[in-house]
Image (spheres, rainbow, N blue to C red):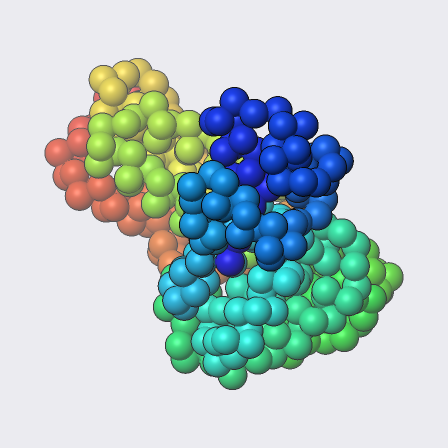
Length: 357
């Protein structure tokens, strides 16, 4: 509920073209009192409010300017979301009111927890982080109600870990993530936290190495996926940009010039790049790029090496083997990735260009 008494007194006074002195004289109060009312410093007593309403030919309700909030669960969730977007500290109190009214609503509890976590970071208040953790624990019990895309129990565990770290209990936060680190989902956060907060550098190196390898695996899916999207829309310049970025990334994490798993992935990406060039009508560039792809693929197949030892930033303390789903041989992988485009005519023309050169 909001009250707009101060601004309404000021507005009505000006509408009647009265000065503060004149209004004060009419009501039998000091000019200072009127000034304080309009500034919102203090409010008139109930009897005076009735006299003011009378004088301005208004009702008390209109003078007070009561605006009742929509306190339905939907409106409450919208308000909490807005507090999060605005990093508004007033969201703390609003969240507590919402929790009293809707203690068993997942969205209300989850958003209230998020507000406390965000305010903990913004205002460096550990107490908010502690409360956020408690609320995220409650949210886990209500997770079956969740309808937010991309939010799951894993999301909540991640946020709980952040709350632990921000409340000064980094080790507990890391252990929580380790316990729920399905398929290495939290490797990056665990590695960072072990290094930055727990100072366990050797252990951090392992998790960070796993993150680099995950990034290497993911990059190919990103490249192939985006390229397919752009090509389907005829956006060949965008497709070229994605491919060149991906190839540059893979080359940037090469530890040495030795042939390695990097070459297998780069050769497949170069083959797709040749396809893109051909779609734009640049046969010369398409042919030379395809030839380069085949050369890299042939070199890899001569001495296949799936060990990640040639990838920079990966700890050399152990052996990490990388596999993909695009064929055992690199030359086979080229044919496999070109099938993505379902364009036999262009692919056939690309291969024919190679034979011509």
